[in-house]
Amino acid sequence: MALTTYCRLLHVHKFIFGNSANILSRVGLGDNGMTVLACPKHSARFKSSEAVDRKEKQRQHMARGLPKQKPVAGVKQVIVVASGKGGVGKSTTAVNLALGISANDQTKSVGLLDADVFGPSIPKLMNLKGNPELTEKNLMRPLMNFGIPCMSMGFLVEETAPIVWRGLMVMSAIEKLLRQVDWGHLDYLVVDMPPGTGDVQLTITQNIPVAGAVIVSTPQDIALLDARRGAEMFRKVNVPVLGLVQNMSVFQCPNCQHQTHIFGEDGARELARTLGVDVLGDVPLHLNIREMSDRGQPVVVSSPDSPEAEAYRKVASAVVQRLAALSD
Image (tube, rainbow, N blue to C red):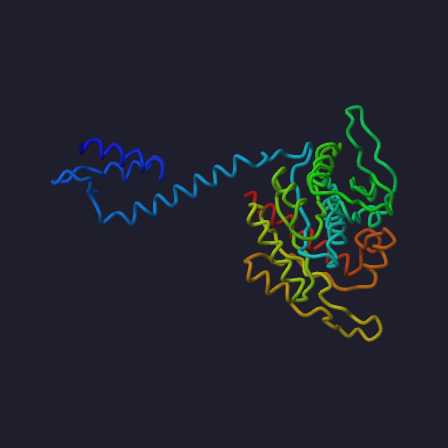
């Protein structure tokens, strides 16, 4: 009878807690024939170990349901440029970051992917129009300007045509933009992400290895709240946050040279300290950046000696240094 009771206890324990041999090895028969634990004082430690085991099993079970990451053919490192909300200059930063990396080191090849399916900006910012040609392997050839190969949904649809798609269609489009493009051989692929933390972000981070994320924000409090959500999202999916870019940090009057912090002062720096990440650089609110962007002539190439172009090149240098530090 006692042996039967012990076997039942063993079976129930395995069903609930799995094969936790540590605690089962200490189950025995007492003087009165009842089952007892040999070392009651260690029960708290065993329970803690069981909780860790259960969490690890849950993590492994969830991981089995995720797609396996596969590198983009020909691309060494992928850098995503993201923001928690729109209107903070993310796409402009992505374009000038790609151009800045190339300007700092002309031996490095850099590509640019517009992952904002619903509001593609790269065609306008890079002054590109037309449809991509197909290779013999039925891959799309990126459009090229300023030495940067670019791919965007804006090359595949009419400029004013709205894209009204559900999530699955968006994820399929992103997969094609990643896998069905002949990128050649790139040292860096800069990805202009859509604002927020949705399907596109998850699709990219779960399907390809991302070397690091750059978060763009203005110093404004409401923008910083969303920027923090974006940074936390990348941490949850195990993507290193390279740092924050404080965009539109200061406005300097062209007449009297007086500086005004229209969106606040050093908000991104305070957020960076809270998150424990670097500030990659400050980009001023400057008329030249807006005018050149609207003309499809980014300041890094159209005004290379300007202070605003220098600001973008410093951001590019900081990004490359952070990637090198992570790979060491």
